[in-house]
Length: 224
Image 1: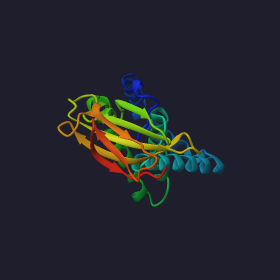
Image 2: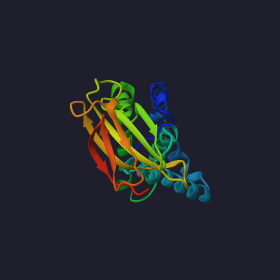
Image 3: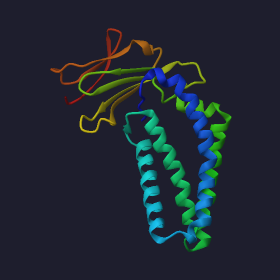
Image 4: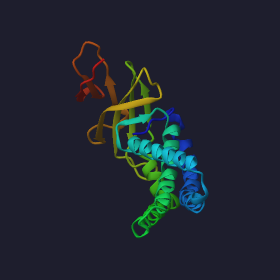
């Protein structure tokens, strides 16, 4: 799940993310190959540090992508994913130096195949704009109790919007840069147009209500 600094940034941020990934995409295999060539000459302590940092970045980016936790800023999220992408090539090409070579040699081949898929998505443009556009909210509303309401129109930057995804995320008061998604719902336009979606927070209620205009369409439990 991706946060965003403010929803007004969505239209201007998307082209910059695209340009950044046009550079990062080929940089991954190149970095992996350079590491592979220089690996035998690296001091042992440097090797340990490279593997430790790369593994940490890769695991962190995977957790970010696959879990309901994320960083507050889409810029920070994008940076962590990019570092995880580069770390993937570092580790796979380093693995190719291990034995048995007939087994580990497939690691850089597999990662290069992954890079080709990413390159097709990035350089054709449409796939990248569609995928990232799905993550950029059109409404980003600060609520009480460290809650944020986000509405993201489905279809990204390349399709007519006929549905929306409503997300409620909670920011931790102890770690302001991190948030956790506590509710998500996909809503078609024939159910409710995205601009009519809103949330009611009631301190005395046992659950919170999701509204379409004046009508309740769903509810979820939230411990204040």
